[in-house]
Image (cartoon, rainbow, N blue to C red):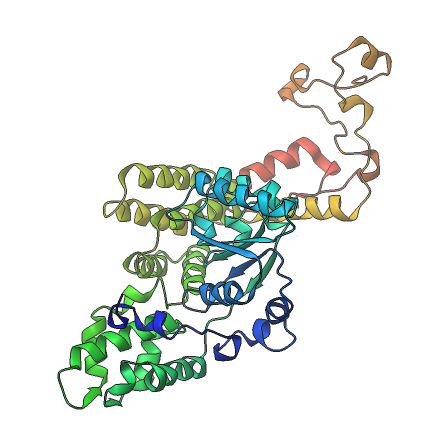
Length: 427
């Protein structure tokens, strides 16, 4: 392939750590990844950050420096078969005391079964895994795999980082350096790029190619605008993905359907996966609406299922209906707060025995130990309820769930107050 056919971003990709701009917290002398590369002691880790911040480049720097057997696959175009092929190589190398490294780009695209296929090889040391993702590993990488890997967060590149990369391209690229370029509106190019080096270099290269016939290439705001056409197209790569979804969720939580629609439109126009948006609304329906309007979870789940069946562009209507419904509902985070308190109790407190009367007694032997003795079957009592202790005796009186006065949850609160009287506090 002749150099002109290779994208500028690829032509100037750093060949050494010293050529890398940004991510000093990981690549400066003495920092984690710098130390791993220098000592060739690579452990399994995940690179998490926005597109165009250097995840793939870091992996390639490791490939150039390591003495290990290095392999790379992309989760979009690979499957379990590809994983097993590399694992087989890793097992063979393991017998010869050779380390095997597998880099998986876009690891969040792998489903649970594909990620499960990696577990044993990573755990036994037959494979050192490096994953790159733009999505939060807490949600997109299974816990069993995540617990065996470190997570390194890559920051969005600063304008100074972008400027250094751009000037390096102008000065050192074998094609660009031979042209007379007047970069008049450099700051506007940086603005369009918004922290993504790949986007910046792509716009710059397209602008240069468009003006190439001129003796003096003048890159103005108008030239860049003509290349970009539609600014929101850069949402997926350069706009702050995490900030936009955060604004969307907070708008629904704050009961502002108009703001929710605006941020949703930003995501959709930028090419966001509609199922990602639907998935986040399912979480919100329980976390921020909960029992104040239980039907919200049903609507959110129906939205997700409908998007799966119908897809885009019609799916945008379903998303809009769901978002405006959720934004308009009464809000309660009582269920979310309740499970957080319960988990905190379990983590920090002693694990008490299950009370005798609540224990299962399927055998005669268990019954002889009084398992289940004293249990009051609620359906044998008026209103199908009778007061009895369900928590361990040591936690008697402990309360996690405090229903709000909002929406349908107010009715739940009143019912619980009647049932438990002075045994629980619902005032």
